[in-house]
Image 1: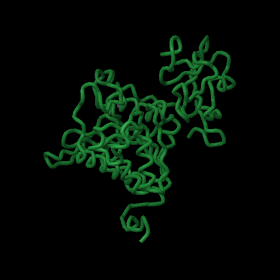
Image 2 (image 1 turned 90 degrees about the vertical axis):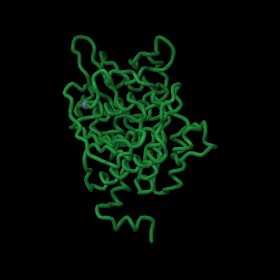
Image 3 (image 1 turned 90 degrees about the horizontal axis):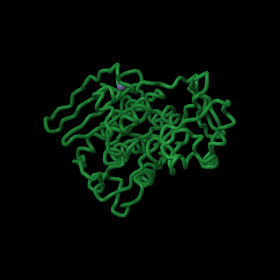
Image 4 (image 1 turned 120 degrees about the horizontal axis):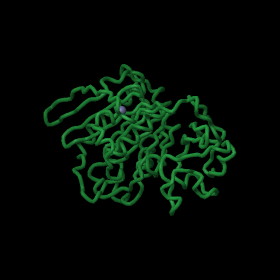
Length: 337
Ligand SMILES: [Zn+2]
């Protein structure tokens, strides 16, 4: 029998659709390991793994893709290498930058599905907001001591932020690269990560195959022996629901060598390009989100601008307005959907 022949016997399974799918998976810790492993074995065609963190010893008891020799290496790179060996049909891209610099908005928009295996509130909110900006469906997993939640958020419905209070939404969280934070939190064990990670993967595969998604949120409690749907509600005050109008997005050619100066040709005199995250570097550049404040010869990639990012362009002066530039890979697609 061939590699995927037994899958063909499963009602609702569609190997071709899986092979044509791209899944962006953010957070390659214990949960991300389990979910990515199952998706690769299932034959998903392309995985984009994003995590700025490195493998630490505490990962080894929970993350099946990591070995002791990997300690100190980037999680995303190590996981990508192991997954490629597990599933040669899966192309795996590793992004070792933080979320906003690792995966551009256009890449989220064009993904078949975005999966969040993040371990901090701030990172989850950031990813939820970026998915809502681009209309990308988001599958979010969270673990507790003996269970967890699997949450599917469609662009038109409630989001992760809707379930939080305004105070929690505004709260500053630990950096999301916090595997070994100063105050260690109880991490999910291997069995719980496998449980929730597998459930995430099952939900993702059903969605990608077009077999339906089931309830939006499922809460699993292994201690109580239950798994039950939860109905999330849309909070009208949740500030994350700000989609970018496709009609305001203009593609511009972009390569890994592109600089802020390359974007200037596409601007009117009173326009300025903004970034989603503060520019790196020293004052006064640092903390600015005006691309004009960066050295004109610096590469956008070195300024924390993700490949295939969509950047806001503000018009100053008398006619204030906003539009967007989409960094399109030179020679590739890039037309807004
Ligand atoms: Zn919301």
